[in-house]
Length: 206
Image (cartoon, rainbow, N blue to C red):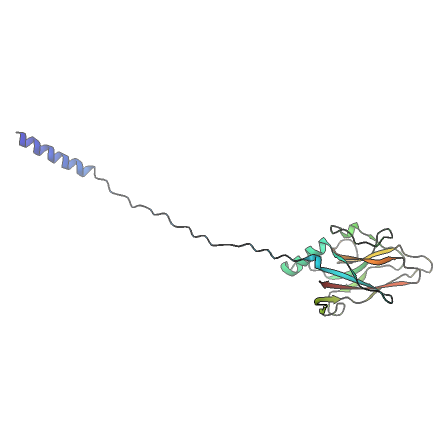
């Protein structure tokens, strides 16, 4: 009798073991994430070394250094790297600073400039072509291009213009365009009746 009970218990344990057997689920091994290295490189363009020079049309006049203004910096980046906001042409214009030769602040726009006024005065067109600008050439180790000579002519018989204290390069003849650069004249110049002022612009990396 004891042997029979022992057998029954053993069989019962075997059956219980069969029903309690659990199937092992496959273990998901996490995938390895591969990071691609990325470097953000900065190459600065020193705009302080790119500027405009002016030569006033009189014997012995010399080139005077200028400033490339904020709108000019932005426009260079837009045109060269982004192929947008390309100026159709340039204009040389004369500005008044109350009789004191000076360059406008970097943040100045065309609307913030007081332009010379007088009979016959007008902004002088300098086209974007190979006729109005010379081929880039080395000058003391740096490349430059020079504009054609433009003459501002007072056509009045008796009245002088307001003082010209600086010249500036703009993309329009009015205030809707961009102020590229400006340069102070050597002295404040009042163009008398019947007289003129000849100006040429040189853009040079230095």
